[in-house]
Structure formats: C-alpha cells, structure tokens
Amino acid sequence: MSVLDLRRENVGRARPAAFALALVLSAASLTPISGASAAMAPSAGKPKARPAQPAKRPPPLPAAEVAALQQRIQGRDAEDIQAALATVRSAGPTAAALAPAIEQLLRRGATLPLLRAAMKTLGALAQTSSSAALAPYVRHRVEELRHEAARAIVTTGGPDAVAALREALHAGDATLRGLAATGLGAMNARDALPDLFEALDRGVPQAASAIGLVCDPAACQKLLGKLGTISFDVMASGLEALLLRSPPLPEAVQLEVVQRVRNLATPDARRLLLDVGSHFPADGQARVRAAVEAATAAMPHNDDDPPNTGAGEARP
Image 1 (tube, rainbow, N blue to C red):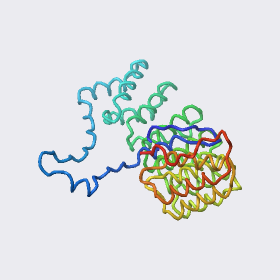
Image 2: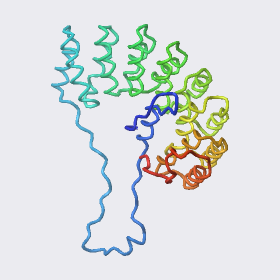
Image 3: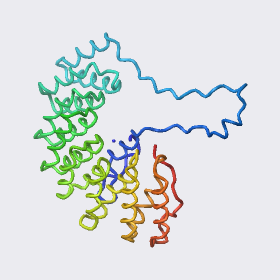
Image 4: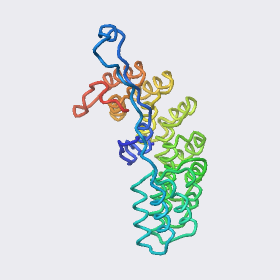
C-alpha cells in the first residue's frame, strides 16, 4: 500500500488506499550528476556530495516504560487499558515489545471498545507475529470487529494475514470483501491472484486495482482481457494501477494496455489516460509515457476535459 495519496474508494474510478500505499512504498532513486557537469566542476574548493543517509529509526521504548505499560494492559481497569493502548499506538513500532501483551488481550477477550483499540494498536506496531491473533477476528460475528481486524492485519502482514484475507474475499460481508481485496493488493500477495480474479468476477470492484498492483505479465493480460465484460469504471482502477506500478511492468505489456484503452475512444477512456499521464512515475518507461500522451491527444474529448499537458507531478 503509499503511502499518502489516499484515493477515492467509490466504484467509479476507484483509487483504493492500498494502491496509493504500494506506490508510495516504491523505492525512490537519486538523480546522478551528469558527466558533463562533473567534468566542468573544479576539484578543489567544493565539498564532495554526501550520499543520502537513511532515516534513523527511533530507539525502542525504555524497558521500564515497557514494563509499566504492560502491567496496565494486563490490568482490570478498562479506562486505564484504553489509555495505555493509546500511548502504545502513539509510540508505534518503537513499542513493538508490547505486541505480545496486546495479542494476549485479544486472545482472552474483552469489551468491544477494548478489542477495537487493541486491533488498532497492533496495526500501529506492525509486527508479523500479531497476525495470528488478529486472524480469527476477521471471521468474527460482530461486523465492526471484522472490519477493524482486516485493516490491522494488512500492516502486520505475513502468511497468516494473507490466508485470512484470501478467506475474507469469499465472505458474505461486502465491505469485508473490499477490505480484503485492497489489503491483498497492498501486501503484494501474488499467491492470491486466483482468489482476486474470482472476486472480480463476483462483483468485488476493489479486486481490479489489487490485480493491477500484483499481476505478472500473464495475469495482467488476463485482466486486460476483461475489458468489455466488466464495467469500465471498475476496470479503470486496475489498468491505472498496472500502468503506474514502480518498478514498471515490461514495456510491451504497458503499451498494449495503452493501445487497448485508446481503441475504446470514449471520454472515460481518455480521462483514465489523462490521469495516468499526470501521475506517471519518475522511473516509468519513456515509450509508454509517449504513448499515453499521444493517445490522449488523439482521442475525442469534451471541452470541459482537463488539458493534455503531458506528464505532471511524478509519483515517488
């Protein structure tokens, strides 16, 4: 999932959060100094450019603070447990040592507000070990707990998370199915492609963008083959994800997508390519960028359409 440019979740031109999240998590490349500029620069009197340093992770919470918070989480005062969980959430992964205590809270059960707070906190800690404790709640009889667990398990990740969300794609809860599809896309769960295609055919619109984020060339071709059989509003989110992936898919795959969309010659198709052109990634392929620009220039459009100004602000 970047993360973030959280896009609209409605079916029409859906831009799920997982899509934005995955794009923001893409690695950014440094721009090198050109050879000509380097040759012209004097060797003396200028400090050498220092390589970019990765951001330092804050240190873990002190052991004494961890012990105090753990004691509060294991206590019986619901208000104090809520306050302790809020403190842990604000600390984020620096409080990872407290994940087992919160997982135990889920396992032993608690009031609905405490369970929801515990799930949100495990999501903030983002520890893979927490997925096993969250997974049963994705099937819980209480709807809001199912949804909270599905959101949290995307950040904890790992095999337990993928298995739980694959199962959730077949649930009777439409919101849960959407959360599951979005989450599998954000986790780059390629093993879930068969389930995502089945969900797409059964009317889960978020599955289109998830497939666009994780498909290999063969699966991308399969998604493209659904043009004309599935609503373009649904397909648009998957095709956009496919064209904006970083690192990009093979050029031939992306060029075929652009050509197929161009052949539709509809205002919605043109708007999709305009949107792709305005967010084309910095490491995108030049021929694909040129094909997008040529297509939007050649396709019929309305007077109120945004102008075709070529690639705009690149996604990181």
